[in-house]
Image (spheres, rainbow, N blue to C red):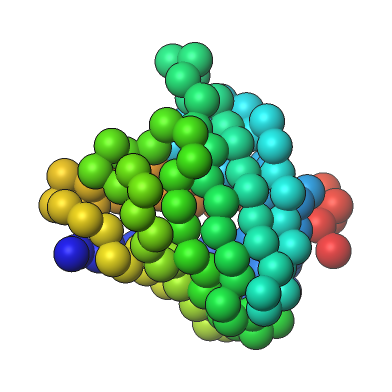
Length: 153
């Protein structure tokens, strides 16, 4: 098994980043690797709660993932299981992996450390790295745009 870690510096407070990660409305703005739409964003971010997110890539292919929240620490940490239910990386079919997102306040915003563990192959890791990198790019753009208009709580 293998894992990947991505680190981003986001120009928004941890509470704002956390809301984008842990609410249906927030997730609907950034999930998926490209600018394709999020079709379903069902998020219950509490220990034992679940998520289900379905998105369509610009190539028209739909993907859906679900999981359960294992840790939820407001404005600091989310840990969840991850399983593809539609599409996704073929090496991960019928497998459950683990995603951890840690937030740390820094000057000018938040350092986000994203770790996806228990991936089956290096090919799968590389595919997920591409996907999550695109999603985190969208998260940064969303929070940057929202902070300019002050619409994010």
